[in-house]
Length: 311
Image (cartoon, rainbow, N blue to C red; front, top):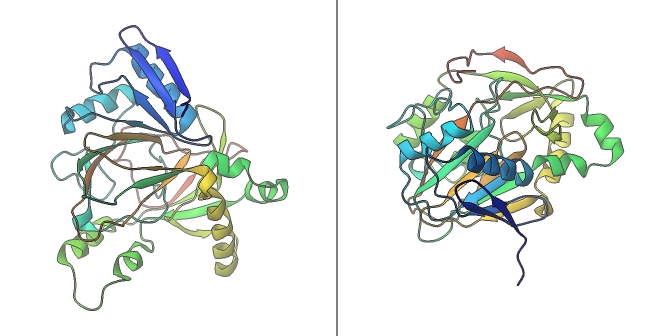
């Protein structure tokens, strides 16, 4: 079997980028992540990320939270762990912990604030013996696949995103009476402050100039449409995002790190590991305010998330 491998020569090491699919995904070999990487290596990683949307690194068992954060600082400015959920051990690190529920629905990280994170870095800490994969989708490819008539419709469309969304229903759908105290506490923390922001459905990527669909499970409604129209159009567009041709699925192994361009992707953590424990640590890097194809920036409707990001 032949692999599509791109060798990127840097000053201090040879970096290989192995393409995983035509639309999205690559594995980067030859790099030990940390805060001591050369500028050439960091530039090669950023170039691979912008091209492939999500990139994966095997064999990073040497990393801890401090090393993950130090590496993140080479790519951008880390945000707080979350606008409402505090980092448990580190203010910048969010534990993605099965004890507090499972984010098994398609989303882009933290779209309910105005400055949507640019990049997310996720490190495997404890994995179940089976299941627990994560799937990413390329929202640029989704937009580009739309027929011209749909592009004309969505180019001027806006959506209201909020953290007070349908997540509770997703968690509760299998529960028959009783309350999981940990899950209930996490949900209360998640919506302890409510944020609502209007974003363009089609945003322009600030580095590549590409157009991407900005949707996902934080969308409450599409502006100017009835609830029925909003839901129907949302589902139609989401179906484009999640076409298998636009996705890549990653099977986690110990020591893995995934980095994705949050401005050009959605992701879904597959909850197929029963009651086994699963824990990964996420760092997000500050982004800018999305702009529409006309150059109009997103608008905050509720909440002040200025504490979340230093930018």
